[in-house]
Image 1 (tube, helix red, strand yellow):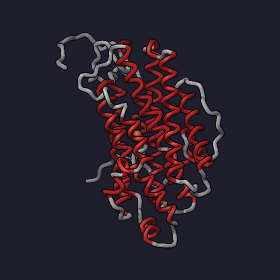
Image 2 (spheres, rainbow, N blue to C red):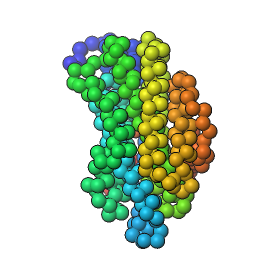
Image 3 (cartoon, rainbow, N blue to C red):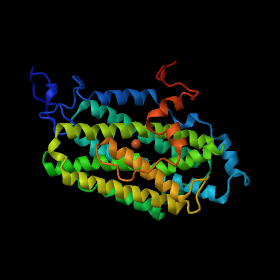
Image 4 (cartoon, helix red, strand yellow):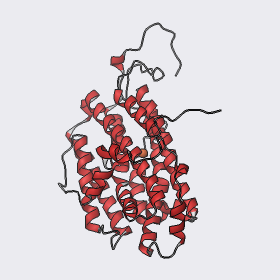
Length: 344
Ligand code: FE
């Protein structure tokens, strides 16, 4: 976009998540969407890299024939099979749908941080796959081969259609609802629901003192993902305030249906992947857990809870789910709040 030479200053009141009138997306100040700046700073203070976590124990346990059962091996490979491509799918959407259409520079700052975190997550899966000597071709292609993964990803990727079209523009009710739907599908369903059976399995390993290096990486990923989810929820709620005309009864019904569909895809995934259950978690527990977190996500964007399920995995919520992650991560040895110091 060409610039106009002018002494007229940016009017903060015209700043919008999307459709900022005469939006200057280059000037960070004055900021309006303070949640984005907070999220950006939290992201920086949570910074981590997979290669700082030792995989020595995991490698020994994976090589040994006595530590992991066949079911556990299959479970680990399948959740990795989901993870290996999931963050690339998220990254594509963040860059090619969100960044392009968001007109708030402070939100764009966080989106840049988020995009980097998605890259770190993909790096983490690559590091685990490589350390354990797994077949990269098999793991990274699982999203096209394994029904339970394929079905989730095909559902999510269908929401890239239209919005990835270079001619797509916000500014009509229809287009803006499509954008808002995209944020809800990617933040709430992909980042807020589709990772959670796999997270639960990884923490199941950790609770048995198995594959702790891999599980520790997944903890950091989950901490990042809960920030991505929070940011997405803030985007949705702010767009609702700025453009209330988008939040029609029909639109709300459609979002509830999509979230219900996502919930079903997720517990179907868990049931197909762990037919006999794993670490004391059975198919019914997974279903109940996914319903429980879906209700929490619905409530946070002002939609009615659908399932009223209680949490069958209280250790997930105590340890890592959303608000309590801060205490949980105090156990961490490495401190990143001083990150960025250079030594020559
Ligand atoms: Fe993410």
